[in-house]
Length: 245
Length: 240
Image (cartoon, rainbow over all chains, first blue to last red; front, side, top):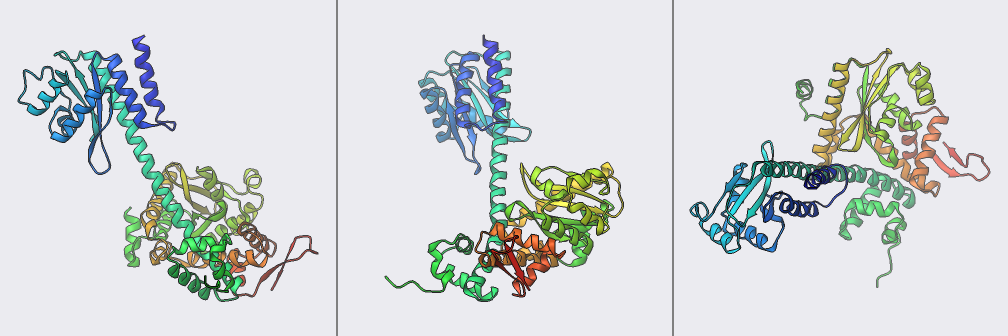
């Protein structure tokens, strides 16, 4: 049964590469699966954003949520070390090694956690965050569990990087389409206006620019409105100024 | 690629699509190369051609609304026609193929400019002899398509400004604005939408065996007007 759940977790992670999905939801599920499958008591995930700021995106319990937030605030802790180094950071008993992260160790113990296993979420040179596993009792994470955990982290990392790359390229494409489109729309609108007002194309362009400036609107927006015969540019297309009031 | 940079330096200009197309033509042993950018109304808009023959062929493709680059744009994949005299090409593009052959072009290869899953244009390679591309030539063409796409992306935020002229710098790009202006004018003359107006312009070019850019120029200079004619079967009358 556990094997099936492990397999299902991988399948769900991989699914995100081909279909629309909610990444935060996925990461929440991942923290819960870690607790179910890996003999840990709590899990949390920290991710870095486009500006390089690390933040908590998922936690399996309120206690671990507070603990992760504490780490971020105190700027001290195994998960931060893990993210910055890109390496696995583990502590089997924080009571025995309090000097590593003195304030964090105290806060962890207060919330009932003694051992921590922080796994880097990394693809080659890029580290996007850390997946952190916590246990109440001291002790090492068994190797099979550690391997599964790192695999979860690896696949989740790929899914996150893929989603971000897609978002960036979608943004770029939108920008490009808008830019290419607006130049066409402006030319078409010049033609429409020139014909309507019986003026030259150059005059039509001047009329549009003047209108755009005096109404504080973008030229491409005005051009679009001319083409769509919107009433808002009525006095531009007819040349009859609207009566005041 | 160094070949592109050399051309740009010789021009004392920033790298523009014409340098990419010229270098591509040389690398893949083409008689000419044309570049389209996705335009309005799901058709490509020719922005550059390395020579007059390529220019004419690219323009015919847009006029007729069919051809390898048009298909590459729509289907987001490379389209290769190593022998336009073959039955396949005739079936695929019954109007474009004879026009291209008449211009002396025997083989055409089109590569989409892709950003992720979106096509923003196409690079079209023309040859006056039939025959396929070698795998090296194909790889090179794909690389040039990538470079052209990267160039357009890089400069996109500068459009519409004078930087666009640098990017698309050439006669073609300058003249094609008249096609858009003419579309606008004709839409008012026929009291119809832009898509229909554009279609009427293209039909007129086809029926009179004239270049679309020339028809557009005539409209813009008010030497050619379109009027709705309800007594005429075709629905419009164009008076010069």
